[in-house]
Amino acid sequence: MLRKQRQRAAVVLPKGVHKVTSRGHEYYYFQAGRGTTAPGPRIRINYDPQTPEFWAALMDAQGKSSVQKANTVNFVIDQYLAVMATTVSKMTLYHYRRSLDLAKRAWGDLPIDGIRPAHVKELMEGLASTPAKANHFLSTMKSMSGWARVKDYTTQSMTEGVRAYKATGGHKPWTDVQIAIAQTKLSGTVRKGFMLYLYTGQRGSDIVRLGWTDIDEGGFNVKQAKTGVDVWCPIVAELAAEMASWEKAPGPFLRQSNGEAYDRRLFWKHFTEAIEDIPELDDVTLHGLRCTAVIRLRRAGLSVGQIGDIVGMSLGTITRYCRFADRKSGGKAALIKLNDHRTPKEQKL
Image (cartoon, rainbow, N blue to C red; front, top):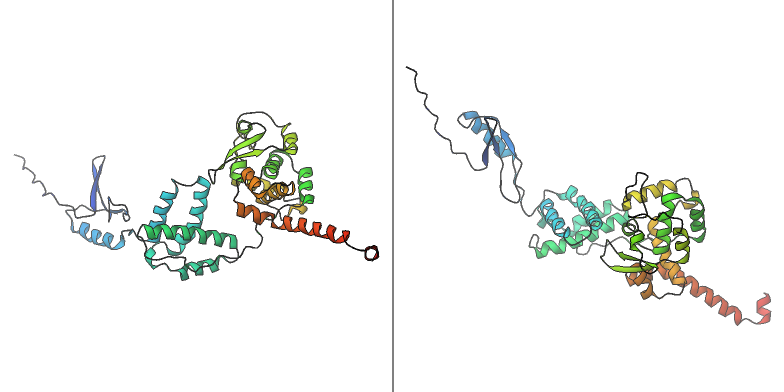
């Protein structure tokens, strides 16, 4: 007569341990904070709960595991970006994430309430060689700091008193000579993009989306990706003449050799490659053409408000872009007036 085997008593698994059954086999894992918004790492325990080795392995796993607390820098940044994803464009969210990755690398596992303006300033100093990057980091941190205080993740500002680096001119407008050289030497899709930048003054994220279906009564109807602002940008004669030779096909004007549409970053890359062998264009940028377009409209006699309606730019930014052109025009007018008042003797000197 066969002897009946005694069933083993069921073991109550301790908190944080769960069993997974797969193909007739049982596997055990420990994970602190499982089922919460901030779980710890999932650690496999390679022993049966009936054995003493299981409990030794469990103690080891408990020592290695750490639950991510809701006030760590990593956690708060992730929560902030999740909220921003519902309110800003994909491009803006991309820049937010890039900037806040700097904070994650520097302070990720630290409590966010311990981050002080001195820490932000120190990180800014480490970015001194790239002031634009540093300033964008500071701007994003200020926004997140205010949000985190309202959400009660931190009790004080992380950026109060931290100063941005002074602007050194930013993206410079193109000269008339540089524009003429580009019109002579650029070709294909890169030339199309150059002309759209020059004569519309739109951001790169909007330039790559423009197509024939965006035209309405002699202008482009643009809903700007960054701001959501609707603008109507007139198609001037120079751009209309250029577009007359473009293929009339659905989709955006700017397409890669494989027919796929561009995004802003890829077009910027291809443009940069195209001007590498043109020494006169060494210091130009595509965004500088946005400034150039504003100055061109200003020289044509448009007011700051009218320019804002066309390019969808803040009045303060337009004024800043136009300051040099306005000063130069004012200086020339003053010179003409002074010459008109010179005596014949003075004019001979």
